[in-house]
Length: 267
Image 1 (cartoon, rainbow, N blue to C red):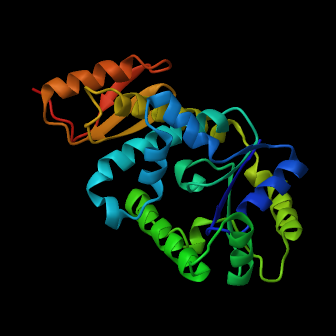
Image 2: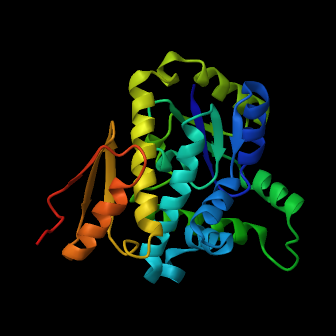
C-alpha cells in the first residue's frame, strides 16, 4: 500500500502522469472529485470551496478562517480515500494534506513553458489572452495560498521525494520513475504508517466536525489524535465554546477521550 501525491504547476502534465500511474499500478485515481465530495458532505458550494482554495490571498485575505475550514473538509475527504486504497492523487497539494504519513510518495512535476502552453491551448479558449501571463498568474496565486495555508513554499525541492522535469523526459518516462520509486520498501505501508494514517483520519474527522457545526465553526483549533486519544490545541477563552468543542469532539466515532493543550482556557 502506498499513496502517490503529485504536485505540479498549471498545465504541467499532472493529469497525464496520474492517468499513466493509475493504468500501470491499478491504484485508484483521485483529483477534483475530492472537492465535490467535501462540498456535498459539509454543505458548502463547490464553487465557493474551489474559490477559497485557489484564489490569491490578496483578493480574499479576510477570509483566511473560511479557507482553513474548507481545507479541513477537503482533507477529511482525502483521508477517507487514502485510508482504504492505494491511491494516486493530483491537485490541491496532497502531500501537505497528508503530513507525517511515511508511505506517501511526494512527486514534483515540472514542465517547460512550451509544453504548458500547448496543454493550455488544447483545453481552453484563450482568445485575446496571453498564455504565458495566464500560466504565471495561476502559479503565483497557487504559491500564495500554499504559503498562507501551509506556511511552505510549494516549489521547495526538500518537500518532495522525486522531482521530474519534462523538458527531456516524456510522461511515460516520468511514470516509470515513479513506479520504480513506488516499489521500494521504504514507501510501503507498515503498522506504524497505517497507525499514522488512522490517527490523521480521526483528527481530520474531529476537525471537520468542529468546522461544520455552527456552535464551533469559529473556534481556532488544531486537532491531533493517537490511537483514539484526541488532543485539541487553540486559543479558546470562552468556557461555553470549550464545552461545545468538547461535546462535539467526543461524539465523533472512534474518539476515546479528549485532552486540551496549554492555550485552551477553562472557567
